[in-house]
Length: 340
Image 1 (cartoon, rainbow, N blue to C red):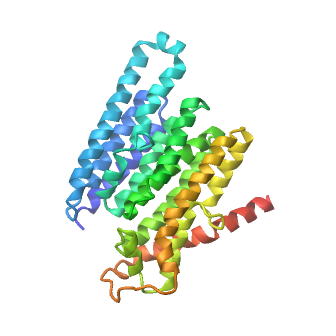
Image 2 (image 1 turned 120 degrees about the vertical axis):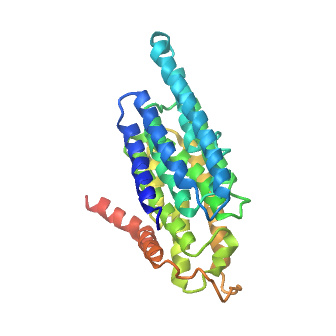
């Protein structure tokens, strides 16, 4: 394809912007990295095959420009009024966290996230849910403390991400609200340690990659289209094991980071938050099971043809790799912990 060199260049600057943000020793440098990341991702969003990408990229640019300008204003304000800011440091931390929460779509600043995701290809959806959250999460980890406002943001993200996906039929919308829910879990993981949220983001990224690669390989956009995967039972097992792992069902590796976060919350005497998050995880597991249930039952109708079947065998191979990690990962990690 002629646009491959362009995509390679934009992907390189995309990762470079993230590295600049997380390695910068000043907020101005972090802002510059976020801007490089934004200017690299918007051209990647555009596609000739889907006319909805134009609207989605415009929405994304407006929201990210609003968050970036707010962040730059706060950085400049801190630079010129450093003495007054030192007295109200906690207020300034809350203020500078707000545009970062808006950038990654955490509740209650999540209103733009579902509509933008609906207009993207599966590859860009994967970038939006995983890579684009890395830099804002790292910057938030410098500021996050166990305060009532922080706990309110965490509870709002967990509740909105769980209840918002209940009446959705689009797989993109379900993964979007799941991402909001997992964002609340990652913010909670920051309260327990610096490395815990990074481990959570890594596992979540692998599981999301498994679901998106299968959805792209078989052209699945809505939950009833999961029935069109009628080639082999193994393909359905791969998709549904990845979805259930993403929901945090204990036999799968998706339960491992949640297990660590629950232990951290118990150690910090945050039992109410822990109970709420576990209950909301059961809600997210419910709408994942709704996708799987119609194919789990014995009698159901299936279409006898699917033009996308085995169209991209490389994507299918990646799906097998990610799904096998999902199924056996928790067992392997538990065995390693017991040995150590």
